Length: 160
Image 1: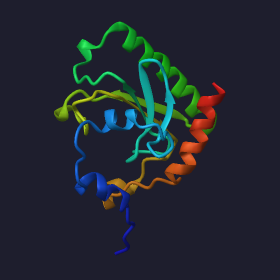
Image 2: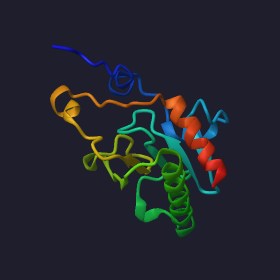
Image 3: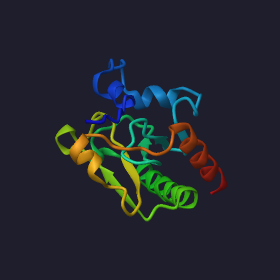
Image 4: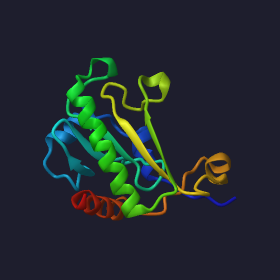
């Protein structure tokens, strides 16, 4: 049997958990490239997902540390939606996907890996990007390095 290693996922699954909120910790830092931050708006920020489902998987995260969507003020929700549109434009222009998944998992039971700070996921999709690997091998093939995708997307955000 051949193995395709996805060692980068090991840190997410088994790695030590940092103190505090992983999103708040990254937002406070100023090295956007090191923290995979693509764009900072007034009330929210766009991160690349360090453990993506597909190339170009980004998250839109409010600066406000909140887990209850019903408690977000209207100005934060509006900012997140405007950033969502900017994110879609950046991904479509720089990566040319055939479609997009947009989702918000509220609570661990709903699939939130980080459930104390809500965030939208935006996942580009291409015809044929789902194949036998996740089903048979439990491995997702990501065909581009995070640094390459970050550069492509940060340039697109700057142009929009």
